[in-house]
Length: 250
Image (tube, rainbow, N blue to C red; front, top):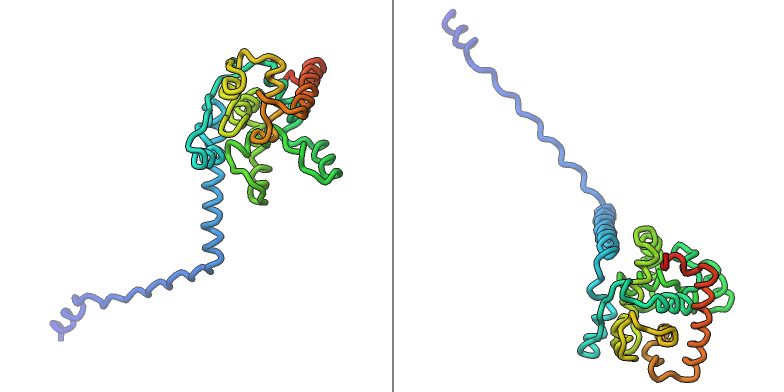
């Protein structure tokens, strides 16, 4: 008896089996989709934030519209120049032609937008800042997606970039003739001079074609372009006199 009980006492107790943990409940597909959508939007936002910071001091290499024109035409003419290599009158002329209140708004000219709505047109409502965002970061064409992205990015660019930088980029990416991008290439193409040597008349002629560079010519102006040129020369003198060019001519 004693031996038996000793053997029984020494025998290991049987192990209890651990209960298997219940598998986590499967998430609904719509939640999974929302998660990945959020991650995707976050990645896009991060990319654009990086580009905005990068292009605040590095010239944008190319944009979607220019790539399309290279595909269509075979090549384009573009040449980046710094702000110091652009005649001051060119900046004033571009602002007078496209966005007279450039120095007074944060990316959107609300007065111009209200006026455009009242007139049933969007002409004049797009600021230079909005055009820079469209040309550098987005694509041409009318869509709610592009307009929404433009509305988000424009104040970000205004916050990070100086007004001088916005105008510098604008003048370097704007199209001044079919396949001719940037004020340096345009000055050479139309007048055979460098951007820093543009006269008031030449600068105003270039600014006059900005809304329709493939339908207007700075070197072979129509009567309409001549009339618009005179108005731009007057406007450039006005904004210089009343201080509306101070934000980029400091």
